[in-house]
Amino acid sequence: MEKNKRIVLAKRPEGLPDESIFRLEECEFPRISEGLVLVKGVYFSVDPYMRGRMIERRSYIPPFSLNETISGGVVAEVIESRSGTFQAGDYVTGMLPWQIYSLGDPRFLRKVDAKAAPVSTALGVLGLTGLTAYFGMLDIGRPVPGETAVVSGAAGAVGMVAGQIARIRGSRAVGIAGSAAKVDYILNELGFDAAIDYKKTDDIGPDLDRACPDGVDVYFDNVGGGISDEVIQRINDNARIPLCGQISLYNATDVPMGPRLQPVLLTRSALMQGFIISNYADRFQEGIGQLAAWMKEGRIKYAETIIDGFENLPRAFLGLFSGENLGKLLVRAF
Image (spheres, rainbow, N blue to C red):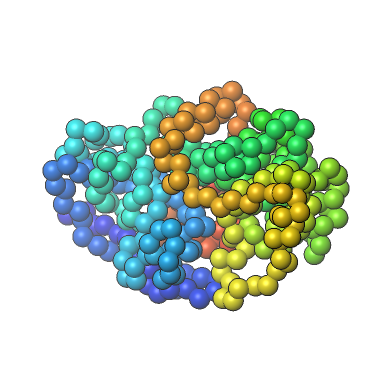
């Protein structure tokens, strides 16, 4: 019998995690039963929200259990099917365990068209990250021609799509990223109108003033912390702030003290709204269809950082917090 492997949560992290919180181990090969599919993971997604699931606390999604398999977005190949929905050789995507071979329930899997686009895009621009940018920017940000939309984490999988959508809607797109190479990419490959390398300065305020001379109408917040404090100080009347991620705070052991933002929101009549992508589950096909059309037209571009080797999933996840990736960070198992 072929061996199987999985990655479990060995202990809960305190502060910035390291590889000691993970454990790679052999596990039983799944036995398929009626109505299920046996799948082999091909691409595994690593995402910042998973850091929150490593802590035992109330949230919008249950925490990972200690010594149990971690799960996340996966593109997998169907090896054997006992379901009429899929057949062997199909590619599917869904929330699956960090395990080479696993069983999937067809009700919670979506077929991936390998001819339409690389299957990896089902975890990125045509998956949850693309959809997060789509609904967050269009439903909450609502950019219009002539406005200025600022995107933090602009070289990440969500941010780069959010900024391009703002431009499609006629707004100026200003990206904030963490290296000269990333700034160059979002300016010259993605067509952002301005970009700021936040790692070049201890005070991003003057850079924001130069990049946003007319203030900020939409702020797509992926990072939180001091960067967001500075952007929000520059919002215009009736600004909209989609609150997507707070990665700068995910490893904090104490709640950091920052500016009190309520007076700014109040006096600018501004909207700040948090959202979870599952809120839009009944509209996923709409979003995927529009993103795919924009890709075909060349109006949406994307980048992927792919690390090979199933055993490198922990290292890839940790790389999220040092900004190693450009675009969507994936692990290709084989």
